[in-house]
Amino acid sequence: MIKSWKLLFVSTPVGALGTGLGGGVELTLHNIAQQMLQRHHQLQVVAPAGSTWEHIPIVQIPGNLQIIAQSQERTDAITMPENSLLANMWEYVHEVESEYDLIVNFAYDWLPFYLTPFCQSPIAHLVSMGSLSHAMDGIIAKVDKKFPHTLGFHSYHQAATFPGLNSPLHILSNGIDVSLYDFCPQPKQQLVWIGRISPEKGLEDAVALSYKTNIPLKIMGKLQDESYWQQICQDYPQAPIEYLGFLPTTQMQKIVRECQALLMTHRWVEAFGNVAIEALACGVPVISYERGGPAEIIQDGETGFLVTPDSIPGLVEAVSRLDEISRHRCRQQAETEFSLEALGDRCEKWFGKILASAVRSVELSNK
Ligand code: UDP
Image 1: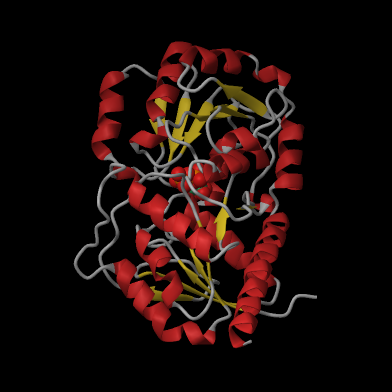
Image 2 (image 1 turned 180 degrees about the vertical axis):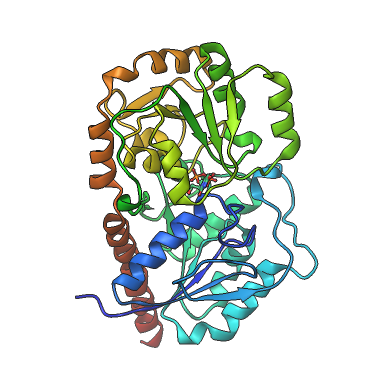
């Protein structure tokens, strides 16, 4: 029996929870928090002011948002805005850390990694993206060396993008409340693409496919880069696409479940791809470029297809083979591999390992 822990979750500083600006991190944090509360751990979330979640205790911190890491070059310096939200969040952590057993960092940002040796409580870092910058790679490798076990990743493909990691990897995959997603045995003739509308997500390839095949494409997600979106609309004025905005899960799944397949056409190494498991939960197969996390989620030919990256003919062929996929099998995979309970188990195991190592190092330093 695991004893009850006092956990402090520190959210991403790129957007308030509930806005979609945080991408998959929002759902991940929500689901892990929910599981920890259900398992009778005590939990407090530190998040940007304006976060809208109910049922989860949030301390709202004001300040200016951090620039998203994806928009920066590999050699760029780390930047902090005036009245930095990230700095304010970690000042709060510094004030209260002695009340907690473990701090869990959800920000893909340099500062929390840098602060790790200066905190008295152990910090678990859930790394939400692949390698994007030299400065981040350096600080992540340093934390890995000094504090083994404290880094968590979503997939092996993601972890492999970081140079110089030596301690054993903690791969948490991800999980969702499958009961929130309804199974639909018979889709309409339409496809879906879900994600932040931003260049690394490669929406233009899904639109090109929709244009070529004339199959309608539903698009959902936060519009993060307006000019990128306008360019796609200009390049494919005749494509049968419809942008529905950023929808809450209940509404989003109503659309997804009626689609023949979810398309994932990302250009970057996707760390995981929450949208893949959300589609599977509705019984919807996933057609994805074989790049990053989705390659560890999709069972090629069973619950979707893995396509040569950046190949639109590859996408067209996969769409033509969709009748080979059993939608029941898709739902079943979500239930068995990506349930909330499975995610909760993996996180508890990881947190337990960090806490045990922290106790051991205190014992050693007292000898
Ligand atoms: N999402 C949503 N409503 C929408 C579109 C997307 O709630 O209309 C959420 C979706 O549930 C997922 C997240 O946005 O959790 C996208 O995460 P993913 O891991 O796929 O990609 P990321 O944005 O982290 O790169």
